[in-house]
Image (cartoon, rainbow, N blue to C red; front, side, top):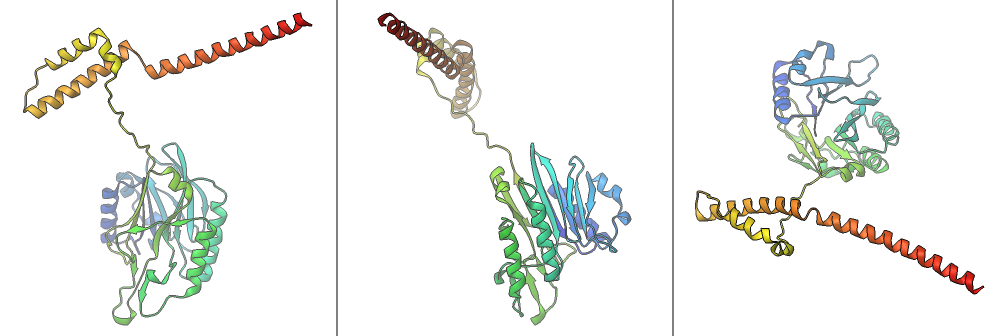
Length: 330
């Protein structure tokens, strides 16, 4: 599952749409969250998204203002919105038979207003005991090393951001790529860089995922780098090791199968011929073992179960015999 978040700072112009189209085609996204589009979605060509295999399923709620957070997903996903405010949209969806949650965030630049965001996120996340990822532009950093500029960052907003993630039991995922995801584009002493865009997750997401990564992508038509979250939940399949069983050589057909397989004609160099004959012999022996001996492990389990039943019957008979002897003695 690929999740992309991008503060694109206006999507009405053609270069921004071209950049967005490149990202959609190259990443095969499950979800795309766009911050600061600066236009109403009704003015955006929706057929353009449909042709690429995506659909808009939600925008955040901003009274008397156009939404500044668009939520787009692949056409084959049906997310359920559980919370929507002027700074976040939270949803749940099913992936590989598991229910996941996502909170897309575009935080206010005012740290006092961000306090409402922290409260809304905690209230939402405590309602669901499921794997959850929170991604977005938080307009805040957690430490001074996530800031580069002439003026030092304010301590209180950093402390409140870190306090929210700790209280919500969310982990800041390390990001591969650039260190700072935003720059103000100015020169000289007024130049500033910060890591404003990031992804966090709870422990449940780490438990169900076989892999998870956060990467910054190429910056195009924006002062923010897009961030891509990728996670997998597929179980790791380990091929069974082939073993030659000693009981096979006691069977009269085993030597005939080996000799017949080894007489097969294979064209190539000596090492190639050897490897191909070994592969062919392995398949023939596995098929022969299944037809002649069956599943030995299942046979052993069945035998053990039968033995336990017989032992239980013997114990019952022994108990009955002792009772009869006690009655006769009385």
